[in-house]
Image 1 (cartoon, rainbow, N blue to C red):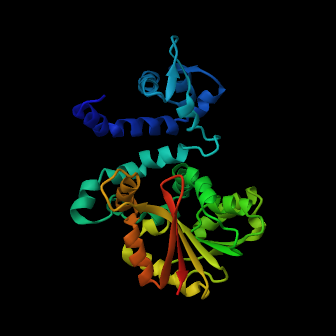
Image 2: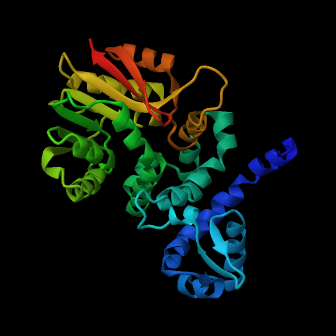
Image 3: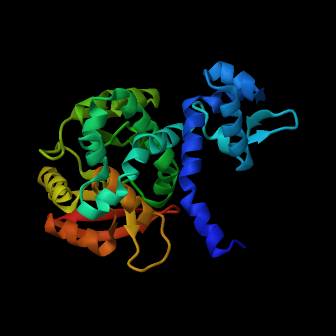
Length: 333
């Protein structure tokens, strides 16, 4: 059992591993090893890296189980690095990339965030995250991949826990690259949908839903949910959207949803619901991530109840899943 000093030392050095995995991903090392074991010299030639420095990086990662090093100093994949291959379903490449790159830089400004309340990302980059992604399409593609890595396992758990069968038209507000909506439509073949997001996101969503074979059941609408959202659906679904924004911004989004919804409409929020007590919960770390990167926050059930009540909704239920994600259901009133 680790001593308190050993445990704390491991936490303090956490950024070492973040950056080491990030560099390995940027150099495509997991992809290069898909063909079989390689020496650091061989990998350096293929990744345009410094051989000795690359060896030291891979040796350290192998000591943590990310790669395997044999007696001849050849490196190969392990179950951990298999997850970092770009062609692996649910690949964590994008997650490692964005957390090691621009999120890492934002977290480095956490002190400023806590002292001033200014979102660290905005302070470092001079603009909010989603504006940054709008004019840097390469980073937007990494963000899409990263969201699959962050939330991919939640989708199956959500579909197992929540029944969409009595919904005729589902509006996915802030639907992003469409990966979640695709999974819902595949499971419910009679369901129709609206995917609503910014104009710079819609094309990526169209391609993903076409690849999934469900695009013919989706109406794609571009817009800004701070201005309005489309009508025409009986249920409005927002997954990990409200947590991106502060209370004032969230009220604007939710009131715009309420204005578009029919009198019998349903609102579905898929979010982490923080416990009121001090127990460990990974969502509390996501709350820091939201504060640092987007300026948003995770919320407790009572905070969600108050927010929804202010925006014209009647609380119906919160449905837990096998992950930390819950589905909050509210009705128009």
